[in-house]
Amino acid sequence: MKRIPALAAFVALAAGAARAAAPPVVSWQEAGGHVGEVVSVEGEVATARTVGDTWILEFARDDPRAFRVVVLLPLLETAPRLPERLYQRVRATGRVQRFQGRAEMVLRGSGQIEVVETGGEAPPAAPAPPPAAPAAPAMPAKPAPSAAAPCERARERWRAAAGEASERLAALGRCLDAVRYRCGPESAALTPALATLDALEREVDATCR
Image (cartoon, rainbow, N blue to C red; front, side, top):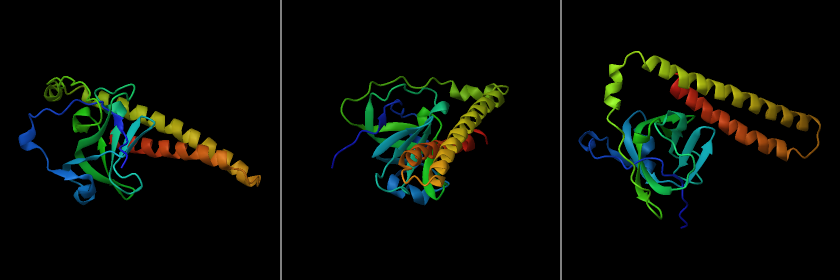
């Protein structure tokens, strides 16, 4: 079976410091049975796509209800500009949740995902994240502003996407009302707009809690 590269290698290989308290590792096929739990889900990525500021990793090419991983790029410590280094097998760690009847895991940090097996040339090892994360709680004044800024940016992107989706929906409506029998372009233009809006709704839900 043809192996298809899925996503840029944007994260360093996970350090072994926290292995003792590591959550259980399950396959992506079993992830649906662990909704509400923090686990590490391992599997080979079949496809990956970018929707707005979100990466979506699919583990089953032809099953729209299979488990998937959603990566919120604005919340990553570092994010690549171009997906030049591709990998196929990953291990994502986080809480499995259900969104619109589908099991998924939303990742908000590069430390939540690691490369298990690379396709082709392995990406160069990146330095481990600096041990500044534990010191963050010592600065109580900063969490509120830093949390508010991503929330407002997410809402602004959602409003922009909603306006675009509304315009494309209106264009499709005008075509249908005119009974031109050729509304394919308008319908095709609406599909990605709705997909972007769907991804941004999850981003708002994740950042504005």
